[in-house]
Length: 197
Image: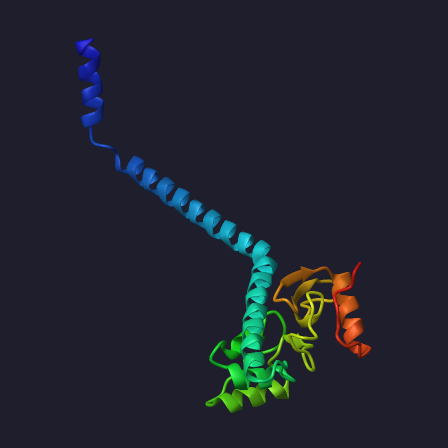
């Protein structure tokens, strides 16, 4: 037994040839690089898979901010909703930044400017809104839980989108439902309501 212990001690204390040391370092580096590439690829593909979900959550938050601003606006304007998003922005700009009107999917860009009026003018000019506002002429007395106040533009023709309802609910709706809502709005239906089925 003592002989094998001495032999093992001699093997462990012997210097490691440089070639074996270089190979070990190379294997560690290759393994580390492979692990790094695998981790980056996994995170990237997971974020790509979840991108629509993330846009949907951001859109819901944006529509909720608009609903809060509408509540403040109606308190100060005899219970009526504003005629447009720029009007709402002018009155309640302290509640949200202009970037909430852009979902990041379409060609719209955030409105920027040195003054609140300049930003509102850009919002009115177009190209800075990914939200379709249907609240003109509405107010808390006319609005019901099924009244559509606003919705996010579609990112693609066969996509669903988020909708703000009169009671403050924000819902994701399937493509067939949003197409019915758009058809009502285009036909001049007032107020636009959620289709029953």
